[in-house]
Length: 150
Figure 1 (cartoon, rainbow, N blue to C red):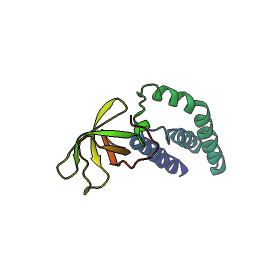
Figure 2 (cartoon, rainbow, N blue to C red):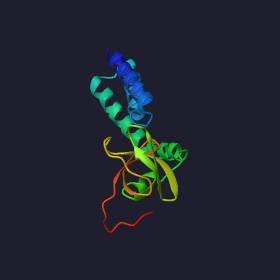
Figure 3 (cartoon, rainbow, N blue to C red):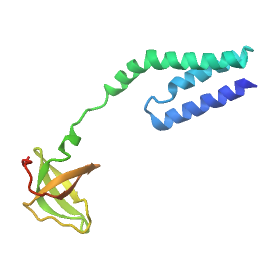
Figure 4 (tube, one colour):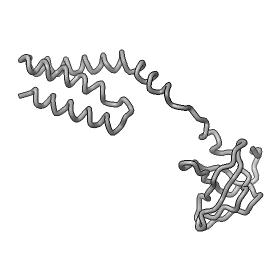
């Protein structure tokens, strides 16, 4: 009877892993598989629970660092978030309603939009980068402080 429980748990962990693709639950799927095999062999529920915890823990501790290193080595690392908080120069009038705008920051020109739809920013003015959404800078009017223009 418990083998069905462990099989269902195995399926749930695999489905969750498929949707997250972040090595979140695959370790517990291995633990559920081991517990299911023990259930099929007739082990008592307490031993199934212990096997689930031990196998999941061992898989997590022993293989996760290797897997994370392998999967993360294929990602191109960028520093796009470093421009948040920098001051940008508006190179094309920013107008959210007309979907226009561009700004130059950190040696690159970006498509830019205002944080507020009602706020437009004219060409050659300064703006502070508040966020990044996709490939667009989200900027707000720059208020003079000790920050420098990039």
